[in-house]
Length: 132
Length: 132
DNA sequence: CTAAAACCAACCTAAGTGGTAGGTAATACA
DNA sequence: TGTATTACCTACCACTTAGGTTGGTTTTAG
Image (cartoon, rainbow over all chains, first blue to last red; front, side):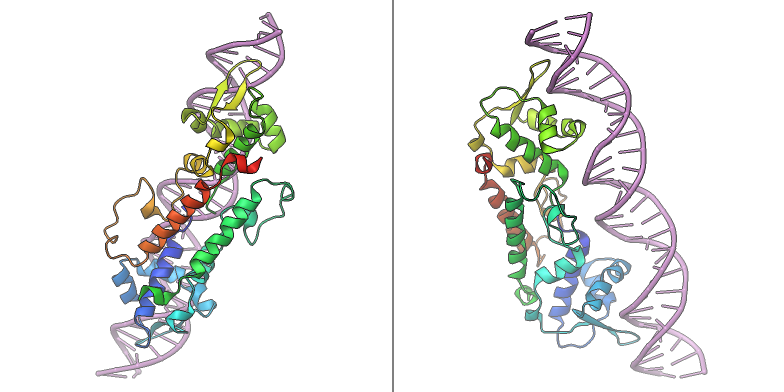
C-alpha cells in the first residue's frame, strides 16, 4: 500500500479544517470525533504540518488549529509529500535515495520515473477546496 | 515506497527472459548474475509467476526458465499485481479489503479510486516488448 | 554417477505501521 | 487564583513487512 494512515488522516484533518475555514481555531478533539480517529494519534501526525506552516495551533482554552491560507491554496500533493515523506514508487527515485550505479543502463528506470511524475501531477492537481 | 524489490526484481527477470525469448530455457543462475541479484532471493520470488503460467521452469541440467508467451503478450501491470499483490494506493481499495463503513460518505475515496485506475492503466499500457 | 538446475521450507534482522500512555506548557475564564 | 481546556512532547509497544539467508530435496542431462 502506497499511502499510510498518516497521509490519509492528515488529509482528512486538513479537509475538516478547510470546512471550518474562517471560524477561528478548531480543537483537534472535535476533528478526531468527527473523523472517528484517535486524538492522540492525530497529535502525533500534526507537528509536521505546523512546522511547515500549513496550519497553526493555538494552545489553551478556546484554542485549536486552523489553516494558515485559504483552502484553494493547498495541494493534496504537498500534504502527502510532507506526511508520507515521498511519493516515489521505487526507492531509487526517493529524495533521500543513494545513487544507483545501474541508473545509466537501467531498462526500467524511465518507466518508474514517468510514473513518479504522473503521481505528483495527479495529486498536485487537486486542492483542498475540491473537497468542500 | 509503493513497489518493493519483489515486483522490481520480478520485472527485471521477465525482461531478461524476454531478451532471451526463443533461445530455450535460461538458468536463473545466469539471470541473477546479469541482474546482480541473489539467486536464492530470486528463487523465492519466481513461484508466483510459474504458478500463474507466466513462465515455465524445467528442472535438471540444461533446464531453467522461459516465457510461455511472446514478450508483447505480457503487461507490466499483470507482473506487478502478481508479485506485489495489489497496486491499490490505500488499504480500503485493496482486493482483500474489509468493507469500510465510511465509504458512502468518504470525501477522499473518489480521489484514491481514480488514482488506482490511473495506476493500473499506466502499467497495463506497457508490455515486456517495450523494454527490448 | 555426477553436476546442474528447479523447487521448497525454515529462519532471521531491521525497519515501518499504527497506535497508546503519560505527561508538560500555555491560555481562557470563573 | 485556580481549574478546565487545549496544544505540544516523549517514550514505549505489538505487529507486520521487507529483504533477505541457509540448507536442503528432487529432477534431469550427459
